[in-house]
Length: 73
Image (cartoon, rainbow, N blue to C red):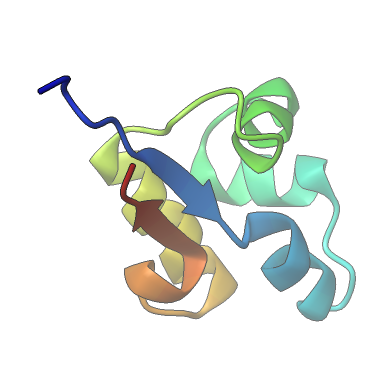
């Protein structure tokens, strides 16, 4: 049997919008990453480190599981 691969999903864009329409740059500044990194995370082109994921969730005021998820297969 082949190895099943999952993928990381996220609600960062939606949650950022709900935080007074926070910009990618504002989130990036608060988290300590570049705006391009936030853009890549939101577009599912880049999976953040666990530390960055926790910082994003904290800045957005939600538990990690509300900001990020994992889909099997």
